[in-house]
Length: 322
Image (cartoon, rainbow, N blue to C red):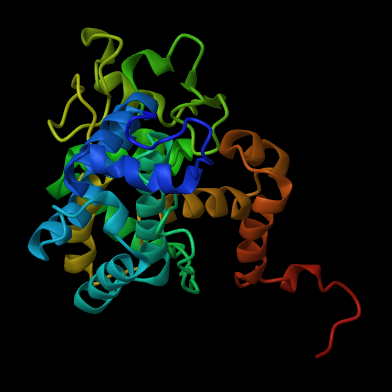
């Protein structure tokens, strides 16, 4: 080293070293693949499948725009902004969807930082868009009956899927992760492990008697315990399916019945809770079934209070106006 005029005691610039580390890998595409391999080790199969698909769209954009062979240190905020703007303009995606794409890309580059492929995250300073949250519609009585009839006639498998949402208050994202071993008909409970729960906490759902016959008809005891219950095979299978599969099937129903875009399968959960409230079930019991905190449950009580009150004529005793 001294022969070449380099001293081991010269000051080392750490940022310069990190910026040059990316050169060890030839392309941005290779770095993305390595980051995906890392994600696969730390995500569930279903979560990783969805994540890989979304990053795949970003990678396709990079390829089409001749950016995929850049050194990873050459990708900048401008490139990411152009991708997000293109998706927003071309697909008319919502602010929430755009923000979710941004979160995925930030996560991707954070993984690259872990491997010292880059020193800074080019997506870190991109601001999120304002989100306008649209509520899942509660189904009116005639709408619910129409949905029930359509499903029973046209898609019995999706009908069962929707009954689980309506009667057990399981979320669609939890249903597609549910395995045969998670249902215990002897104890009449559905066990939702932490890695399958939206909240990240292990929870137990009591099976109502009205749902038991539906579960018995599925003959789950004839399948291996680790099979996923709801899949694109229309039966328990070894590999999970995404909830988008069921969402697309439900869209056919919405189109034919001319329901709004806010009439979702998740809305069946809200409707089930509201129905119990209107029929006199106690808030305390419903909260135990639905796994809702008192704060979250307030949304359902507000909806219930907005419904037309029953006729109170019978409470007019004396005096009466004639």
